[in-house]
Length: 475
Image (cartoon, rainbow, N blue to C red; front, side, top):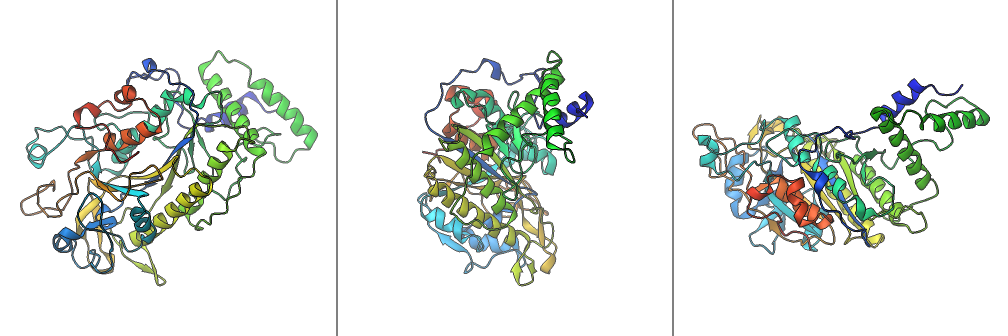
């Protein structure tokens, strides 16, 4: 039996991902952006989203403020100073990385990693005074998981958007990929807001346990299992004919375009075998980043015919909502945040090594995002100690073009009720008011990726409210 038109629409709708239809209001004025020329070299951004709210207070500790840190964290959450991995940034001061992150410490000392401190959603610069007296504009729904994830991924703190900053960047720089038709935005962690553009569709694929060409079987349409080869050939013919029907209907055309893109992508990957020598850890993030490295190798292999020049990837690691058990031990191994940061450190180092293997270490930049940081003050005691939702956070940027061994931004004063704390009086928690906006952080990455300085305000509409649209951590 040939697939029905209803089957085609239903299965195609599942593949639409985060694509915005043509009726989407172009509220950011992207339609009128300048058109860049085709690029001659490759660049990729790789987002690693730490879902749940990573506690940045333990990712990087100011050793100059260690007494205040230890006092605020208490014995259940504070990392002993002797256990921290000390570094001496070119920007000054003494800091220590989490003891489960030796690979990140090494990349930092090799000038391949930078830390951008106290980053968070901001509508405008805020001080403790303007935050508390209400004269300053605050982001939407502070301390809420879903809302703050949205603000980190859209890059706009004063409204709810249906597009992410990665998607809007991709919309503008499509010409940099020339005639290549392979998807620019690729997720290894499901459809997400960050990669959703007005016109940009994201491709969602599995981790390294999934074959690269498993986007859609080449010789059979959806629902083809259990049929003979001849039957599948007939079904494929009907499927192809159906994709050309009713293209004047917007939803049908969108579904048809998505299936066509899937078939083209599967065909492009079918003939490549992107084997890597670099060993990756067999962890959730390790498998995701291995798949990213494989796609990058396939995309840049001149014999594969894909010939991409710009790509943005999305990976995700969950479990960071550590209201309790932040430093638990599981069967003698670190659990909670400790175990997750070990996974982050090992996977990011393996991924950097893979870019060196490919000769692309200067052309690929990975970075972390998260919902928010967590309170300096602990929640609970003993083995069940954790921390609650906060705001400003510390984020990693890794790559050969990163101006590393440097702390960017203003590290917060680690004092309960101090100048960076949202609260004072009898119940301060240690929730840091950001000194660097998500827009500044993202715009710096986007500018390196190829976004014209004249188009920055179109993607990041609040950027003009901050001192600099570029934080200077990329060469």
